[in-house]
Length: 432
Ligand code: NAD
Image (cartoon, rainbow, N blue to C red; front, side, top):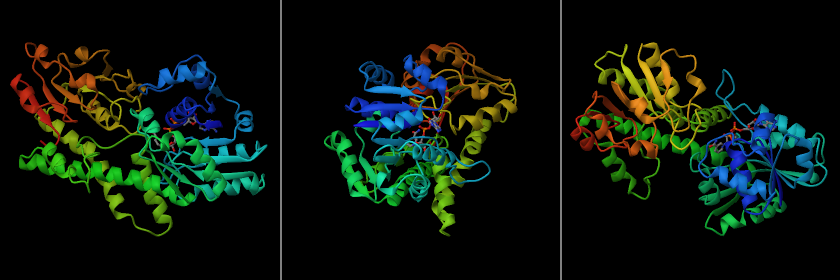
């Protein structure tokens, strides 16, 4: 099939290249000329394990292409996936849908034959209705169909998640499009993905309800971790003890810093805002947002306590600054609250991230990027493990034990406290 992905970011690029690898002809379009120019040279705009090889392979065999020409790419394709951003509106909590609607207007100018237009971006319930209205101003309704096909991939595991999803959700109000899309997804369904066929509004809400639930699970275990810290219990025992109950499930039960990233913070805000529009009070999700917003402050209080209330001039090392491991995504990472706070308090901060230097800390005078774990850790008073990259799990602390001793605040509980303590380091974890 001939597919066009509009928006070549984390979702558009990953799903575009995976669709091409499944044998479809795919054009990935973006308005960012620099991004497209680089992609054509084989330079990727994001870090995602395994992505580069797949892009190079499918670009070489010409099943994958890149373009800035939206009109022409739409004309050449049967199925159009909208994968543009849906960030939070400025000074509000609802989703900013301006990129979606502006793409809708562009699509309406280029419909030369029947097209299936899909929102793969996360969009609030009834966005598809509005998109249909926009397009039908210029195009007869029997020439196009608007479908919702939310994406559930996780950054860092995106390719695996795309190829082996738990489910494929198609929200379509017409049978013809549903059949075409079931056909498109057959290679994934035959590998075990469940196919969920529903109406468009339900598919839109499934995505928000999923993210709100996962954010709730993380926040729940983070709050239980707070209780563990006061009662001498290890949160890891609790996660195992409750996660083995199949009704609960063990995933997303790892205590850590505030959840961040490009999805949970904005999507929890947006679902509450949508519900308000319909005079529905999502009090559970509201509490989750409130609790998560307070979490970085809580962890910073612990840093203060670990450093005996003396942050000024203390050398603090951050291992990992992205919102989680295996991604370069800084959006809503808790480090964006923690590092500026510590900088303002006069700490001298060095950070090391496997995905390199981050421009977000450029303006902070006490913050330096290190190009190795060794350089970042050496001479520190406190080492904060902010993300759980494998590179950090295998640090040999023994080699630092003869030089200056530092304290370790393991915000992902990746180390065994006893092992670290036996090397002479003071160890602090989350909920333990
Ligand atoms: P992104 O910011 O990485 O990519 C969006 C891309 O769209 C950008 O490259 C931008 O230049 C491009 N764009 C914007 N307007 C355009 C236009 N008019 N024409 C062509 N290109 C245009 O965003 P993302 O992280 O890929 O997220 C996209 C959507 O998918 C969001 O709604 C997000 O909530 C959802 N989502 C994201 C993830 C994730 O892990 N990142 C997972 C599931 C769903």
